[in-house]
Image 1 (spheres, rainbow, N blue to C red):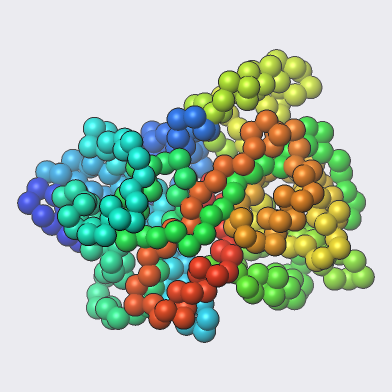
Image 2: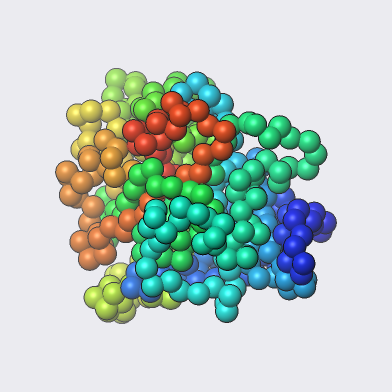
Length: 376
């Protein structure tokens, strides 16, 4: 069992840090309902593997007189933007236990947040120093002037998280959509290939070229479990996707129509193995690659991967200003579940730390790469 390190103390409040999730945190997160009223609400079922992925993770425990009030994770994704190498701290698994979390009635405006210290609660001010310098999560000496960012994907309907992120100094640099791709009876494709070890360098070069105009692109998880699938033409990849299996325990699908449809489909023998009103399994699609003119093959690849993995549903997340999102928005071939459920939207929120203005501009002017697996 890992020994926690006390990072900050204020009267009876403490922040403790661990580099791997302990049993207390896992139990807390599995009890936490994700999503917002009016939208899909669910429990994670496969958190441990996800929380242990990555090379540098820190898990914070907020305690009062020893009792855990909440938790949060800082997951470092080292990145280079406009030639500047920097830490990129993805904020995940933030959860404050009731009753200290209140439900705000409106989103705070920039005017409301001009003076953060006056607007935030004691609890907020206590946590702020970690967001101002996440490098202090590391044990030992660190340089205080190193460029870095803290970033999070925040559901636009989650007013509490939106306001908290503003209090922590994050601002919106863009927006993203999450949406499904489904085929109730996916067709097999004989053109789908996995990537051999000796081909990976060339495939990765193509993927990096495809995402060169995006910020926050990182490729560490590509080829995990040998699950990057491609279709080639003339020996060259023209379409590719990385897939990860994800399972949620469903609390509410978010609207009466979807809840009724899930219950109805679950009673049909041919569909009951695919659709369960209490649990949903899907594939997270990441590192999507498509050469211009090969959009039809991308759809063939996605459907063929569903068939190969014995799934009927996948999820994707992408910046609304990206060419990739325009491709899917234009084609409108995402399946019946997308017609029922539609898109959900979130803000891409960033806090800049010792970052030159020219580099900041990149985040506002360019699309952000959104990994579905990390954010689902």
